[in-house]
Image 1 (spheres, rainbow, N blue to C red):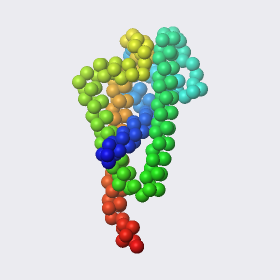
Image 2: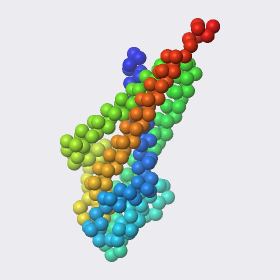
Image 3: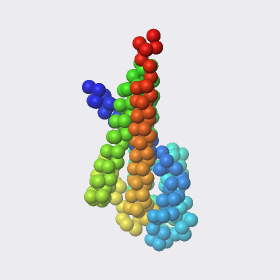
Image 4: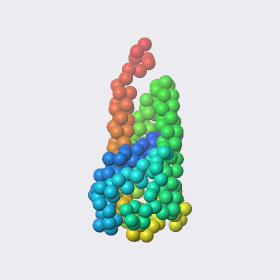
Length: 224
């Protein structure tokens, strides 16, 4: 029973970390750095600075509620057509759902932690944190293995979880693909994995510290 409770609590903590790890990736600095490295500048036919501006517009469109509409034509070349805009709107909705889910998980974690502390169930807190760290590692390892074995299949499967088939595939010469090619998403996925692993490591270390502190705390009978 204790193991089952620890795993259930650890899964909640790990999912919270997974959601939390998305926030840094949506920062403009991350988009700019990855775009500078991976955007197919030669294919877009646009100046590098213009590519960065467009990448930021797309980031703003999917991350913020009050973003400007994306241009259908960019400096004389095709920009973002209805299909691209529709997909990016779907991405916006998925990210909104992820934020909401992460918020609910945060509330659940705070309430659970508060109850456990009030009841002085520090061993349960330690077990949950350490289990959460393990689950974070397992999630990253599973994703890494799937991506390494067949990235295209993994990429397609991942998209199928959130988007209708055919709505997220675009021609290689579309501006959306040229701005955000496969290399961009591989780097973003790696960054997410590192953040999740760091979160898992912090939880595991915190769990061990809590366990160590609890084991050295005087019992109620000793205090009496």
